[in-house]
Amino acid sequence: MTYIVTGYYGSGKTEFVLNLALALAAEKVTIADLDIINPFFRSRERANALASLGIEVTGSVFESHVAQDVPALSFAFLSCIRAGENVIIDLPGGEGGLRLLSGCYDAIDPARCQFLCVFNKYRPETDSAEKMIGFCKNINASSPLPITGLVNNGNLLAYTTAEHVLESQKMVLAACRELGLLLKYTLVQEDIYAAIALNIESEHVLTFPAPQMRKSWQM
View 1 (tube, one colour):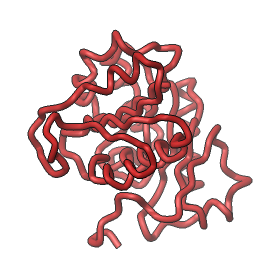
View 2 (tube, helix red, strand yellow):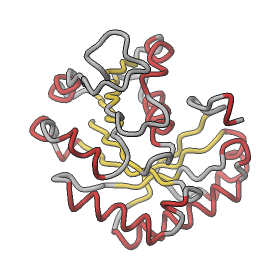
View 3 (spheres, helix red, strand yellow):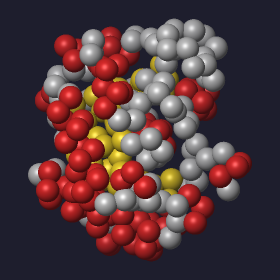
View 4 (cartoon, one colour):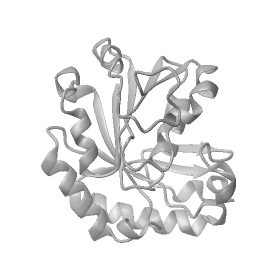
């Protein structure tokens, strides 16, 4: 399966990508880190830890590439897609990120592809269902592959409560209804999920003990 993941800058897209990869780790999985436009975090920052779990992260063509902004991307992951392996493509935020897929569509089978859009209600750019809908419509207008599902990542970092997750879910579900899409995933911290498990309406739930990408200045 190919998973293409987009979302507005700061939506928690990369956090979702890492946790999705961990959920798929029983099978071979590759993360294609194409996030080179104003990235908050990069999947490649966790490459060493993920490698110990059998998860490969591809990004730059250079060996030492964790903090580089040089857009010398490796598209070696296309061979994994053609082989039918699990590949998660971490796109840059916004429509601009689609340009990096321009040479990839021939390798992607639409029947084996999920194009997921990650939303966090608590980002000002996507703090209403209307803004979420507009974002998806802009992506669909620019992409040969349409968005197939939405992801609720409603959070306020360390200040997140169960109510925050459920309020974000309500807004993402409203966007789903308007777009004719399913709420495919919810990303939520384990202790919060335990309190609201019966109220989650997504097809899948990814839980985590602590954020993968949080920095000390975010605590």
